[in-house]
Image 1 (tube, rainbow, N blue to C red):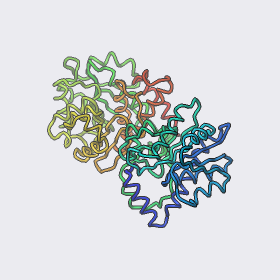
Image 2: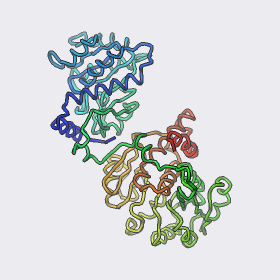
Image 3: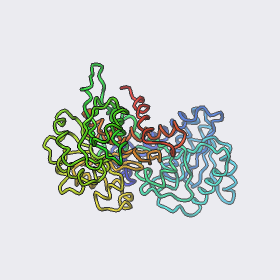
Image 4: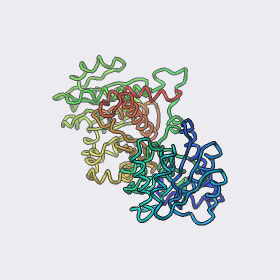
Amino acid sequence: MKYVSVEEMVQIEQESDARGHTYPEMMERAGRGLAEVVQETYADLESRKVIALVGSGNNGGDALVALDYLASWGWEVTALILRSRGDDDPLESRVREAGGRVLEITGEGVRETIKREIPVHTVLLDGVLGTGIRLPVRGELGERLDAARRILAGMEDPPHVVAVDCPSGVDADTGEVDPSCIPAEITVTMAAVKQGLLKFPAFRFLGDLRVVGIGLPDDLESYRAVNREVVGYDWVKRTLPSRPLESHKGTFGTALIVAGSVNFTGAAALSAEGAYRVGVGLVSLAVPEPLHPALAGSLPETTWLPLPAVNGCIAQDALSVIEGYMDRTSGLLVGPGFGTHESTKTFLIHLLQSSSLPPMVVDADGLKLISSVANWEKDIPSPSVLTPHPGEMSVMTGLSTGEIQNDRVGVAERYAREWGHVVVLKGAHTVIASPGGQTRILPLATPALASAGTGDVLAGVIVGFVAQGMEPFAAASIGAWIHAQAGLTAAARLGNTASVLASDVADSLVDVMSWFDI
């Protein structure tokens, strides 16, 4: 799924129209796709009555086309025209000919009509304003939209709201939201995900985000030129490494995880479990020697490389213990639970000078330590995977966390190019940027992942895929998506997001991996 600005979407539609797949044809496909989502989701409702709030633009047209299809499938349909579409609108005529009602409300009876009509329907299509609007929503239309919002908010059992392309009142570029905006249960967006939908506060208004096609030609240059995509289930399923019946543990690689310090003992274990749960053949854990007795009993599947330690942290001469394992390692993770002791920094410098580093993931304190080393980005394998949260990204770049959060996609892309490595900028709607200019964004945000240790699990998941032979950008993209889904799954199992621990996320990786036939 492409991730586009409003301007890019306009260019895509213009090129499609010029190529002969016209605006009416695109609207027909969009309207049918919208109707299919409604039918598939709500067909079992006891009362199948749908009302569309319709504006004068294209998404109002999409809603009217959807009503025509729904009427043919047995729904009772009503179009409530909040802004006139002009005399003899053919789409309004289609709804009438299908047996539906078309009500164009004017004058002082507007609120009364809205108040009368909305409560007697079970589904509401919000097709008032589209992706091209700029806020605020002013005048008569804003008052009508707000009246509908207030009526819905005051209902004990309101209809299911389905937004057409975007909830009316959302700026589809910036993510800003007008006070009159109606929150949706489902947002059906057309052809591509508009960038503002995956920004706050807009994301709070989307509900479940669905994408439907509009029949674009396969070789549209303006569409192919978009290098940003949203990660989804279908892509993950296609891209996951296969697991042949004749496999053995060597088939799925070896992950070497160098992690831990006396203050962060659990980070190594969480990373190891993350790697194992996504299918790596073997995990070797290199931890400061004092941590080994505490961890060994909880991870019987893991092999161990106890490292010399200083004050419970990795000692500067620890490289000699792991050097001999590099040639049998297909994925290396460094950093979880490291701490920032000077001896660990010196160890890391020695590691960067090694001539035989396998594909690499750098996480947590490892990122802080390497960023203080001159030319670090040239010393690690290219491309490696870097997994900073905004605070760590701030340390690495000198930008404030506010600057980073205000332009998450742009910042991740900039430094992926400059450093020559894959950047996984964690947080709500995690951004995965490659040095080659491709970017993937997760359409997921949950406070279930806002607790200590969940990043260690993610780092382990990513190195688990790297060790299985996936190229780093794909491993990071799939790993981030599966990890986020595990957070959501853990929250659903526990009944809330506040109680989710990193270990719950690691456990839930099993559930997410079971979605795929591997």
